[in-house]
Length: 377
Image (cartoon, rainbow, N blue to C red; front, top):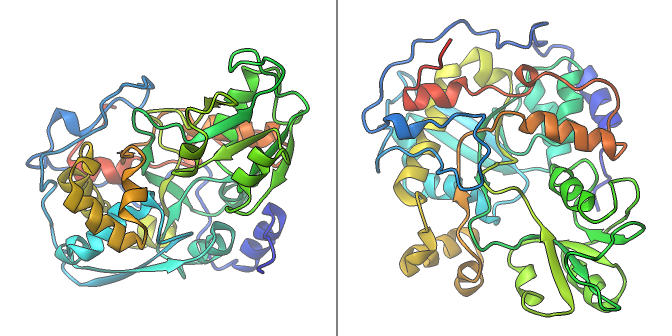
């Protein structure tokens, strides 16, 4: 079993990589201004106002097959770390590789399985080019330590009908609206440094609790549901498709999950793609965005043959994959998400100090370039 890496240990590891490029004081990427050209097939619908937090906001979309490939002058190999190759949120990357979308851009992309705390020092030093993960507390700590890591593209938010999130076992005539979580024991696979702390905090607030008044019990993936149904914990964060096991049972209630329309993860870039080769960084996002527009633009699980193909790529059961709603794939990053995540980390006691400004954590410029959007000045 691998030892867990704390934020403090991560910062120590980052400090050893003193050869890395430090972030400028204003948090702006070191690369100069880039020319943004219109992109065929990517019109007004290819960009949404980052301040629009409406749950029913239609995600940005280009036409099928857009943005078209623009192969790099010189072929480039990129190593991208991800915590898993089997999760559905990784499906656009797996399919882009299988369908040759990265090759069309002149990229040879290699996926490497690494937990985020182990991948971050490598990303900061340039030993990795990108990380497909989330801006967790460890990422905030690394950036606060002065290294150039930016969240550059989103991944997904839950589709309509999803009930992946916080579930509670009801007792003594309780209902979803009356149940209190103060002093509750909560089972989760996820530590307090995860982005899921933000939606958890929102759910707790509606039920008389906060991140410090709930006892967290970290469990293995196979144990979370058993602990909830067996009485070992009072509530649990249930992922796809585990929540289906209690959905419709009057003894359990769903209290909320990831906000709809607000991705909490996606692509993180380090100095290689932010400063040294931003052309390759844009090319990677262009292939990803094209894959979303072509294959994941809507309810992709309505196509049984496509579900079967995804199941083969993800090495999962097609019926299990089809049993939960399609994810709403979304490459954009909402305004204020980084601040809300940092507040949750501070409230849970994982991080301290003043929050970082959004410009130190988020860069929307690369996906804006990929779809030909010129931000208003």
